[in-house]
Amino acid sequence: MIETRHLRYFVAVAEMLHFGRAAERLNIAQPALSRQIQQLEQELGVLLLERTQRRVRLTAAGRLYLERATRLLDELAKATGDVRRAHAGHAGRLSVGFIHSSTYSVTPAILGQYHASFPDVELVLHEMTIFEQFRALRENVIDVGILRPPVGDPHLSVMPFRDEDFLIVAPETHPLAGKGNADASLADMAAETFVLFEQRKSPLFHSRIISMCEAAGFVPQVEQYANQIHTVLGLVRAGMGISIVPEVARNLHMPGIRFLPIRETPPPVQVALAWRSLDETPTVHSFRAMVADMFPAKPGAAAI
Image (tube, rainbow, N blue to C red; front, side, top):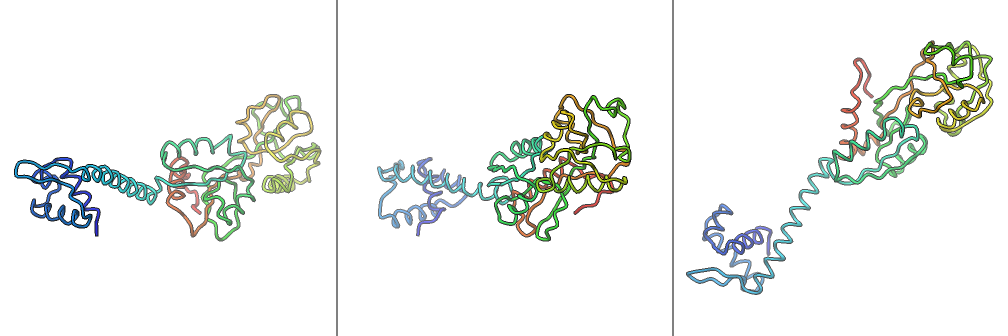
């Protein structure tokens, strides 16, 4: 049976055309090398090398075999390297889901850094809502999701890595806009009309804002509903009402509106990674580790 060592030994002799120097290169005894080449020729039934006392020369079959053997060894080395890189999370394929709002906060930096650090990993990207990501994770459509907790699925692991405070946003013509950088109390918003995130498409923001207002003693009067942060800001700018949005909304730099901190400082909303607990592939692990390095946990923060 022809083995890899036979190919390596033959290539060494064929390239050096000298058994002694080839044996030194391979760090084996010359008689042992000669026996291995003879075994290879016997297995093939073909003479690969013409040997005289003065020189060694490739036959026509030997030249062809050198070309093919070199190619096979190169492919084997490449396959070995690819497998080792894949095992270490440095190669392969990674399917990532992400929420829309993360595209103007963390996602560009994360994907850019990962692509630069792991160029041999093929990134497959999917813009999805939070609940679409839950389903895609369960159905193996994506490997990891960039989303907002809570997740509430015991089969998924979650790593929060960014907190975003909530802000009040109002048209620049609104009396609130004259407060400059001063904060505003939710209790003073009871008489205002609101642009609110729609419950079906943005249940997290919808429920959090309703809870904030109820804690301040009122139920918001909703003038318009919207699904995305930029749509909410556009409707606020148009004078449809005020709203409450995560601070990432500032990154849109939309003119004609003003942001105000909330005096009651409600708990922030988080951005997190989620992945299947029992299926953390090497590429998921390398992705998660990189994000953890990019966004170090704050002192005292609880790990999930």
